[in-house]
Image (cartoon, rainbow, N blue to C red; front, side, top):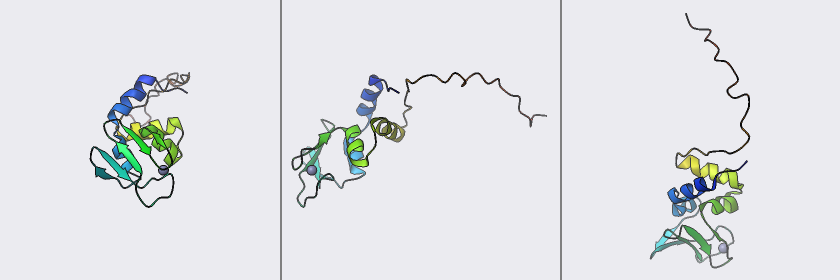
Length: 117
Ligand SMILES: [Zn+2]
């Protein structure tokens, strides 16, 4: 199954990485960016930063970085498709799946409702 690249772009444009990461990590605004304790390695002083302008997160401690989809994959353990669907669901977007069309989907004739009088 493939998800069209332009949908990914649109999704990332709509998703806010600060909001996504903020679901799991307590972030504090520091200047233009947000920072918090890195969820990928144990630490006591925040070296994990999220940039709303770049829509990117980066940890100076362990080097983890990525975008909103990457965060869901790395942190929540989702695969790419799951992460895309999770994000799409949150922003009310329908994921256009380019998989093999189900031949039976429209083959069923509309059965007349049994309850009809
Ligand atoms: Zn880290």
